[in-house]
Image (cartoon, rainbow, N blue to C red; front, top):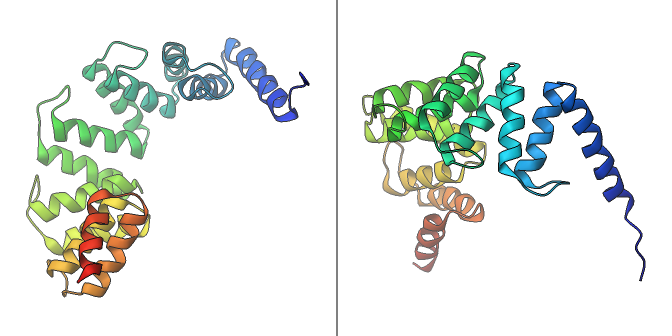
Length: 220
């Protein structure tokens, strides 16, 4: 039996070695990339503690992506002790650099009261900022806020606008919600055809509720 290692595996090992050398020299990009490898087990054994340490080193050099990823590790308690307050501090630092994922995560923290006093109004403010910067999940959440009047004045025209923006970018939850709006004629002219179109897209993306709803509609 051959013991030869494939060229791609050798290339991966060389890449990891190079990243380790650069990271040890203080290169923040290498620290971030190596952290990703340890977080996801790509080319190395998965190790959240090492990933968190490397994200921390890159964060201290001002890397916003590293701040967001380290914040999520603190939020989830992966490789570090769960600490919502630390997660929020990291998200705020990245948000000040304009990172839309950090802005979205701050919105979620306020939405669920993680490390801060729960506030739908402040959550909607951050969702709006992140959505304006292109963060798709924030578009969907902002649409839902307008749909339900959580943190903002209920406004179905705005809800449809943000659901549509997120749907066109492939967000399954937004596609499901937009489909239901067309099915029920909420904020739009009722259209079973468009309802099925958007529910099918959501179902194909794995949205379970959309799959069930679509199956019932197609049986009629």
